[in-house]
Image (cartoon, rainbow, N blue to C red; front, side, top):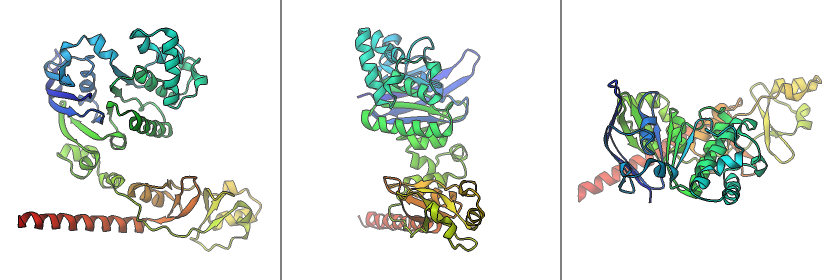
Length: 382
């Protein structure tokens, strides 16, 4: 058990600035909680009070019911993993020794700590061949993975993460987010993650704590409820006017119809007979999508020009078990207006139309309304 509770927490600095104002919040053991909000709203300060890097002016923070003010700060921090932006790695130490740092501080021998560090590198998806490199020899994404490995090396029950993925490019960021979801599924740590990105918060969090100006907690709820039922005008504004689109990520797309796709292999493009507005999906020998072909593409190939210069890039792909947001994104990001659904092997299995996605959304809402009305009638009859 590693639940964390804030009770009446306020942090006021000597100049009178209030960073956190009367924060009351309980984080369940084994949950992934995201603190989100604009710059200067107190989210990082709140997180840093958990490991006493910042002390509150007023109030109490407990871990498993124990007041952290009664715990030696050094001992407290050794039992809490901490990941910051750009990894926060020691530049003069090799990767393996960066990861082994906390286990050695806890009394393990260098050889034992190093052996365990290699296991943790495996866990976060890093090749052991990187163990002998220095941080400067790694990419940004690799550095962040090492930072996560170091935080996990001593198997702490609590993990704090301060905007750890904000300095990497979007593709690497998405990979790291997926890695965190996988790790949390395996380890079930109590994670507190700070970000200013609502999409990242929705992607990662079991619960989201939205902080507003003056360090005031505006809403603490599931991602779905934050998107669909913002508690204040501030939350609604922060989440954005496209929160309805984000909320589609909580709706299944299993019943969205798949349409037959017109496919072609590269050696058959010149023989295609397409009219204006018609498209064919280019696939390889295994049936994996490679882009879209239209009349312009066909004419270019017949004129002896390389297909790659006239191939339209495909949109995002819809994978098995995806949600309505992913299905709609596949459709509207495709130049043809047809989203491509693939199987686990990446083979194209059918096309998705935006109209079908919206029809499925409407059907789900009608079902939810019917359930609510039935429950209302049943409650009235009691």
